[in-house]
Amino acid sequence: MNGPALRIETDRFGHFTFQVGADLVELHTALVRAEDAWRRFSASPLAQVTSRLQREVLVQSVYGTNTIEGGLLSEEETSQALDLDPATVQAEQDIRVRNIRNAYELAARAGDDPTWRLTLPFIQAVHAEITRDLETDDNRAGRFRDNPKTRPTVVGSEEHGGVYRPPQYGRDIQRLMVGLVDWHQSLLEAQLPPMVRAPLVHLYFELIHPFWDGNGRVGRVLEAALLRHAGLHYAPFAMAKFYQENIHRYFALFNQCRKLAEADRPSPNAPFVALHLEGLRIVCDRLHDRVNAMVGVLLYEAVLRQKLDQKAINARQYALIRLVLDGGAPVPPKVLKGDPRYRALYARLTERTAHRDLKELQELRLLVPDGRGDWVPGFLNA
Image 1 (spheres, one colour):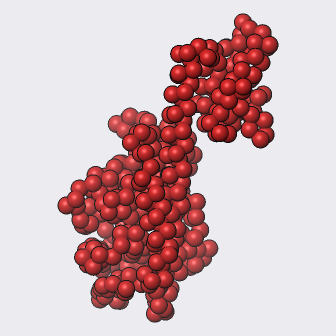
Image 2 (spheres, rainbow, N blue to C red):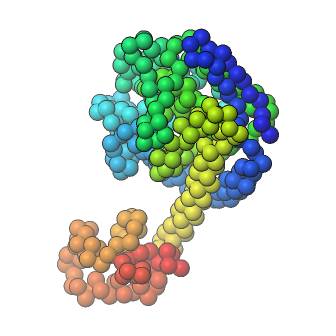
């Protein structure tokens, strides 16, 4: 299925063609695997862990898309920045985090509205959120580029397949952005699968590169909004982390697809769509595993509370397990014993008591050593 195409003659950039540019027969296996991964994940017991999952995906999404664009915060620092009062944020890195979160929230609200359609005002609103309090003389909220001849925009790098001069003239950019929106509507009416539509919009948006700054962030948010509107939750926003992990392939494919189209090669956009489908499959599988792990923790915590109520373990042993559980990773014995909370628990007790507490928890299979001898909650080795 080639799908609808749209060729636009611009004033100064020449012709620009929107096309599916991917053979769905050849992509069938990848598409089916991504759809199967989504169905498996969506069948998970999401209701039990929804708020925690939303938080984790938000942190990963903001961290991923911010890092791609040169953000300097770690994932932990990103999480901390998200907890700041938005009204008091002043540092540039924290402002970037706040803005990306707001843009993703805008995309989520739009995606949940059954009447929503991709429009120029929506694209400009996403850019306004991305650039809030970061505007420059050139890069104004929602305003498309109109380059003076002395200041050309050039994107890409030799490392990622070469440099590219996107449209420079404001009227050409405006015309192509209208064309992108109209073309997407034709894809929707042709019932092209959303897992193909979304990356195509992402690809062509980046090739037009309509804003002075923020294009990458906006493009990933648009992709997420289209997938969310198609009924996919969590996974669309987690794609930013996948792109960040595969940043060199991600950047190189924009140039590769562009060059294949310029050479009039068949299916020029297939490599980018294939990357997207691979990412969705991986992301959905990760989310599925994460939900199962979260549910496992909930069941384990219920068992712990029951053991405590039944006096099968004492309050000190319960606190010891919580210490390991809250760390979220295996804890080496030396690290455990050096933790201030551990020392506080056994400050007035002998080492023999601490050893007995750990031995009893191990016998109950509530706290066990892993293959390296580090302490882990018992359900991880069940």
